[in-house]
Amino acid sequence: MFGKRSNAPAPATRPQAPAPRPVAVVADAPAAPPPQEAPRAEPPPPPPPAAINVEADAKYQETKQSVFSALIQAVDLTELGKLDAASVREEINDIIGEIISMRNLVLSAAEQEKLITDICNDVLGLGPLEPLIARDDIADIMVNGPAKVYIETGGKIQLTDIKFRDNAQLMNICQRIVAAVGRRVDESSPICDARLLDGSRVNVIAPPLAIDGAALTIRKFKKDKLKLTDLTKFKSISPAGAKLLEIIGHCRLNTVVSGGTGSGKTTLLNCLTAYIDKGERVITCEDSAELQLQQPHVVRLETRPPNLEGQGEISMRALIKNCLRMRPERIIVGEVRGPEAFDLLQAMNTGHDGSMGTIHANNPREAISRIENMIAMGGFVLPAKTVREQIAGAVNVILQAQRLRDGSRKITHVTEVVGMEGEVVTLQDLVIFEFLSEDENGRIVGQHKSTGLRPKFYDKVRYFGKERELAEALEALAAGG
Image 1 (cartoon, rainbow, N blue to C red):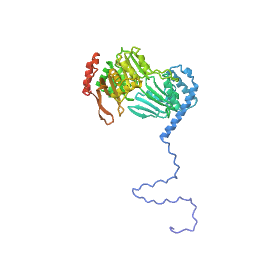
Image 2: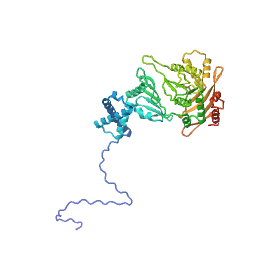
Image 3: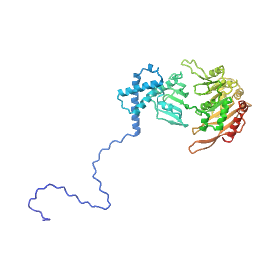
Image 4: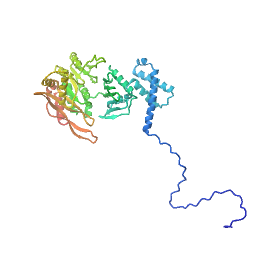
């Protein structure tokens, strides 16, 4: 009976699971969470992407060094030197493929292609710098030791992720560059100027003078030679100003291009030489040949540094003096740095009209003073008035190039050397760059304007039949064109 316990033994039954407890149901209440398992040990967090990249790069460099060492042992460098560059690259490509197969190296197709390209660049080219050399938008490459490579592009300096294996690899690249032009760089001769095959200017300074490793600076030139029309597109000069420069280059006016480092002096000089008549004999004198004249009758000369014994040096003065015996019609000096300024003035004053050169100065007036100082450096004991008369009689036009704070390059002055007043060289600006404002991107906005003065060289321009073009260019400049 319900509620009473029976005395009879109960039949054996299977033990039943206890009945579940009733759960109170609340309307709209969230479901009860499932029973939680015992907490497990958390796996270690993945390494950051930067650490992965560093580890992968280190492994790649180790593989590259291993393959490179095997390649050097496998090839006959003497026989390899007899082949042209394309055949050498193909031969190296095949040998590297065999080394990778024999050593069972696990590389993707992209990694293998990169490995082959890098090793070919190390053997045949400039190693890690080859991708930068191939880019046409880079103006300067600056290597500050094996771990830091900077570039200048768009007028701004940027740090790249390119690195050399060590200072030995960097020095090997530097020696390869300078050896191509018959020069050397090492501890006994740690400073050297050279050039690449395309004319790009190279400067190397090696340890112990460079404390943090060899410093290599390359001033690159564009593959497509710049013309005055390109300078107008870059707004370095207005179209009417470019027409005035064309007249100056054609009418054999003695011209000095002045400006600071990286202001575009050599580029401007190259543009001016495009208007030299094709029938003229032109001789260029440079410390490191970088001018790229397009005329058919050009003789290129280059100075030579002394050897280890201090013998055999050929200075710029010696080159310019020798030019006078080579029947030149124009003499073009890549950069006037010292007492050769006096010899260039002598050449300008003795029938070699249309001679040109570049000089480091901040404005046209300083350019005159710099020429005076460089003449004094040569030990010439001449009265100041005599030197200034030489300058006033030799130089017709000073073109001032300047790199502005936004990275752009402008021709800021077209200045004529008028003559002497007492003991002072008289200058007059024909065209100046007038700063107006700055746009929202920080770019400087301005215009080239004529000062309205009549050039003293008008008669010489008329002699060449260009007086109408000169008048039109000056009128357009006066109107702001």
